[in-house]
Length: 332
View 1 (cartoon, rainbow, N blue to C red):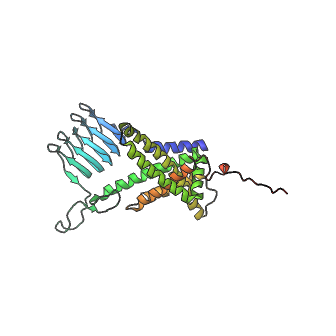
View 2: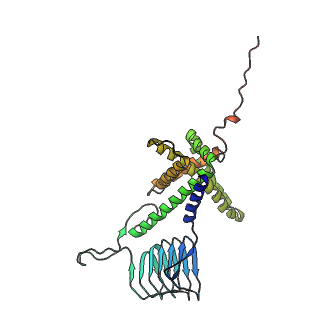
View 3: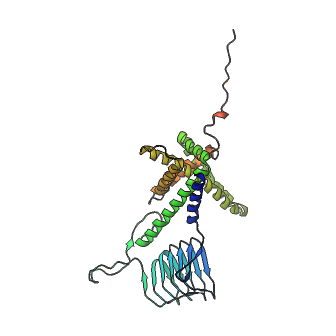
């Protein structure tokens, strides 16, 4: 059962980080890009459609796409010829001077068009609504979703907001899957970090905040020299792994508390971790200042627990290292 759980979690992780693959079906030899990069070089022809989901695609000058091009939250650099329609949903599209689109252009994201770029069909930009009222009262126009929250700018279209929500949910699911994998592969270490945070809340938070400060200062010092600049990415990668491990341990703790409050008993740690990591990751994505403050709080607790428990290998406080009590008997 444990092996099947590991395989299931690995499959979830693979779907979150899937590389570009060719989509073939219905006689259409197209290309689908999931979170990766794709380049159609000059002189090449893609005899089908091109779909980009959160990835980056480039159509060089002299390249030809025989079908449609669709981007869902991805990035498109077009300098070649698109013989079909072009649609961007929440992504960014840049049409170079040599770009040519035979069909329509529907841009529900950021679309830039250089002088000389040709669009033969209709151009529709923004999220449009048309009600059954005379045009003198209501006319089709871009409907802004004026939200001044974290990651949102005034004028953000409703569809673009939906794309960002989907991205956030996919990220939360990915972190949740990694949390389940950590509990399966490192059950004792994850449990020890969780118990450290529970039993020593104040020291854990203090050490975590100090760790974040030291990380920022170390990055500043390393930035002074060239060798230090090269070391900064590795430092942050290591810190990210440690913080993520602490985040998962905090998720395990929260999940158990939630299940206890709901009077659920006999729940496995992996289920508790999945529920807890999902909950705290969802709260961390909250708009305004709530999300960032909550993220710093949980990250500090998790980091402090990882440091105090020495990556989950020892309890805190470590009773084995306490000084022995010496009793001196009174001699008559």
